[in-house]
Length: 269
Image (cartoon, rainbow, N blue to C red; front, side):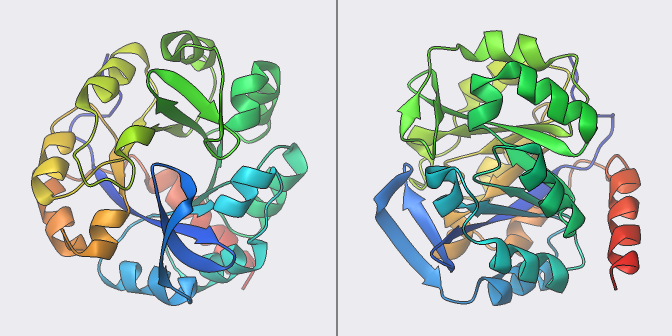
């Protein structure tokens, strides 16, 4: 099935992973294998927006591991400083936390651990915030990982996709953990499997290393990709990444929610 309006805009979304208030990248989700890229995540966010980013992907790694957001002040500062929609994940385990982030200006929240473990809660959250919840699915060796990638569950990917098919989600962020931070190329097989099994927009994450990776992803039935280490290590520039995706004709599939994002920003000053 086709997960995008045709033709549609393929989003290249820079990732900003937050650990102890700093911008970092982990290797395959290993908290002990971290690289610190910048002590000022707000400056990093501004740099990506200035370079043409139309959306940012913020992850509270402390929150993902601990189950409670730990970098809220930094996230609020980024959302306030950047005039593009931000999707925020990490430690969102209840409606109140999701609501606080959305009220603070986040355009979308990304939920994973509790959503995987408690489908009923996921259904309730999606109903409460239609089109503003992204389901984050992190896959290692064919199994879904939770709790900051420190645990795996028995639920298979195809079964979980079937469960969430009727929900009013904003999309699915699918991460291949073995590829994450490795610059080894995306897991195209995993992405193809997911895209074939859902009507929801799928955003690819993990392993992107160069413009050719992005060009190949943009030709698939995907809504976009999240790029992290490749940008920070300089194996691809954001400008080159955006040009690689530009062969898909832009449309307005994101505009209704982005306009709502702008209106919320105006109300909050």
